[in-house]
Image (cartoon, rainbow, N blue to C red):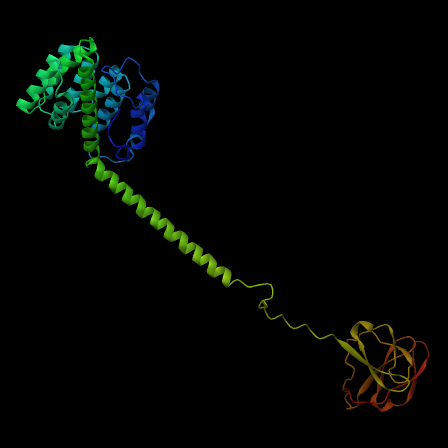
Length: 350
């Protein structure tokens, strides 16, 4: 059972601490090693384990991993990582490992190398509170020395834990020893984490919450701006009844026509260009005549004498013939088929 607030710890570390359950941890942690913890710590990257990618003191990373391995029952693996940690934390971790294994003298040697540690002051206060009014002689002496010297007694605490492992403490004294050992673990874990991050755990948690709140507010603002833009676009979107502007279409060329004088009455009738070579009907007298095919020669050409020519079409065979302007109003015979027809008088073109 760890009293550290979960909100100040990275989620991965919290998960590893909770593998042992919520009950008070026993004196010895390695009797039931948690395989999940060993596998996770062997694979997980620092950025995911510690919740960030940059650190104030990277050497505390192995120290925290070693503590988590010790907590989950892997003292030998913890010792390997402890060798990568600077003093005095290296000796502290090795001392915890020897103490867990019940090796009294190596444990005391390691704690001699620790000297004074930053967690000792708070650990002393917790131990005094947890051991007051206890009747066991060794624990009572421990409490008196703590109160008198106002400093931690790591060697006497090793003896108390040795008595607990040997089942030589009464129930109250054993529970107190377990509580103190858990408090020691919590304080050491906090110490290593705060050195790793370079800031207090609570302040770091507040900073993260504030950053997340700011990021959420920014995301919400962007979402609202997007919704407003979408709403504005819908209001200005043309409906089906709206007239869509069309580009000006190019003017279609006028259909070509041909004007033909009726060979019978001389009335000029307009026909489409496509009617050339076909029969046409006079709009005035109803006479049927052939509409001549297109002739590339001018209809009227000037002669050296100044007299003009008029082109006529035989109403029977459609053969073209050029006649002097003076023959207008007179009859002529088609040179192709002999048909006699009237050369129309000159009339103004509409």
